[in-house]
Length: 462
Image 1 (cartoon, one colour):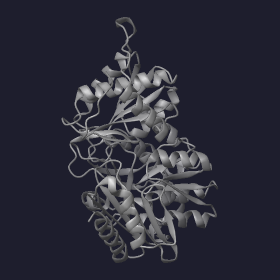
Image 2 (cartoon, rainbow, N blue to C red; image 1 turned 45 degrees about the horizontal axis):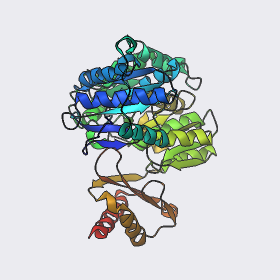
Image 3 (cartoon, helix red, strand yellow; image 1 turned 120 degrees about the horizontal axis):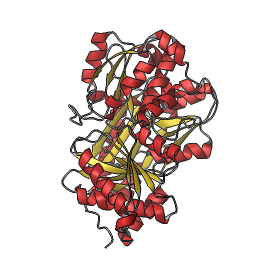
């Protein structure tokens, strides 16, 4: 029978996400994986899927279930074990596999897990292909393979090493000069998959580092999203250790946040801005980011004499726009950096290397690099709202806060460029909430924009 998806399973272009035990159980994960394998074969992509996971305690159970589901429809599985998501997607592309399957809930708390789906190009499924896959799940019962045509299982333990080597081979990095500089670094891997890769990368770059949360056991000691308010321990470590920079990654290592040598978080948006400045110093070309990213990225692009395009929130949306525009660098303000010459995937280890290159070129610690760009303040809030009434909410919001620039490609974004302000309101793709994100030159003004947005949307629901 076609698969019935539980009502409390979060389904989006990002994949299928939920809490362990309800609705996520091994039977569901096996069925989703079987459907993915059958879908890939029907589309002619092939019969090999690369599988990887983050460090969550539910990961081994769900990876085993996914392997069984894939094998049941005749798909061969290449299991990478615990790896960063960018490592998984790169391995899929380089191997020429039909697709990639990631068992990871990214920045969600430990009681969550998810399946993420990548194509043979090493990029997550775009909205069109994800829609076809979801229709396949609803309408089709995957054909199971006979006993003598079941999929096989192969173990690949070299993906992380290959990923590190690929970063070190980037022409825009002066690896030898970084090594000679001998940066002192603090790092927080929050007990995620980063503990398996970042030590190797930092050693290869000649860094002296001290870390917390380096054991990849999935027992996150804090909210694993690398936001400023979650980085107190890293800040103390950086301040007490006398470092040049501190790095924090999320459990699947596609997002990178920074703290400076005083232990002060500088905001996830600065990750992309500083990485973009590094790339644009070597290569000229467009930049792409999403609608919720700080305008400091536009400042970086403007100084380099290139255009900055905005795409809807979501890695795949940014990646596809980067392809269309021929962008040389891009990403998202949540700390996700994409370098097309490496791959079209958010990549925190790549971001670390680019930040170190930037500090080398600027001959400064992180605080000095940050001071060279305009300062803005972003305020983020979330609230519950009836999603069936979002269109009415947007209309009320646009009327209550008239703006010279309006973008409706992803929720509603209102911008006042002459004031250096904007407000973006959109339903979350990973949580059952509506997100309010505002930026201004002062925190007071950004908070005021968020409050006005919350008030206007609440009035629409009355």
